[in-house]
Image (cartoon, rainbow, N blue to C red; front, side, top):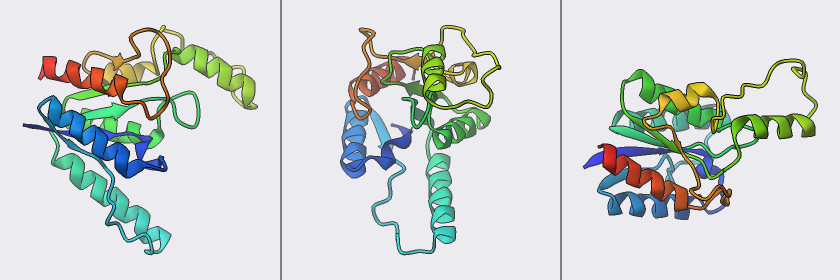
Length: 176
């Protein structure tokens, strides 16, 4: 079975362990072994400088052991996907391993960027907004096999919804 690294900011959810378990179970349903970068045994009492390095090392070790990445690219803390998730996506791209992604947001990147710019003072306000009609930045879309899987009906889902994740799993199965 292919091992799939389940990237995304889901680790910040208050119920991160349950979310990871649910995603792993869905992966199994589609014939994949899901590997979530969630370590419940992590010693949170470590000094911050050691803790973040430990988390990074653990995540890289998990990525090395995986065949593909499935990234939650739902906008996080801004108009685009989580920065850490994008580093992980880039790692898989650099290793020439297949990358898949999904977003629970039905709004396009340009629309979200304009809305975010209206809410937050932007020192780059005079710069153009990339508008290719894509779900996110063109480099993110270009890194993925088949683009970003989106809600099928054009309506955004809650951040932790697994409906679009499952659609992404189905598309992985058809390409693997």
